[in-house]
Length: 172
Image (cartoon, rainbow, N blue to C red):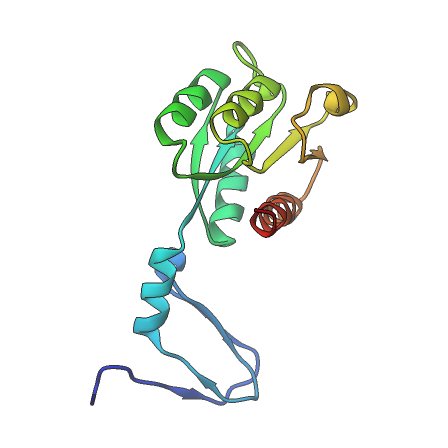
């Protein structure tokens, strides 16, 4: 099968490359790396994980959208509770996780968004973000969720949602 798969040998130290759209990410060190771009591309397209991100602060929403995207997730962003409810109704079968602020301004808050999402998708991983309402998490939060208090680094949200997804995937 000449030309079906082709490989490159790379012998460079600390060389990183990221292709546009984040379809492939690879690192080459002093060891030999054989890279199969076609196989990698096909595998990545079949494993898209879609998250719903809900935050009323546009700056935080954009930063988290970028961080989660770089982490390999496809992000659907909503700016308030009403918009989040409509996304949940339309895309419930595709959603694999929810990251929501608690205080979303006028309309449903993050607690309501997570409860509605869990009514439709019972095992959906939920990460709450809050600067002021964190003390209410034990009484208002859905089971098997986590809370990240503001201020936080975007990597903390990525770690929290990934950990919850790993837990939910390991339990039938």
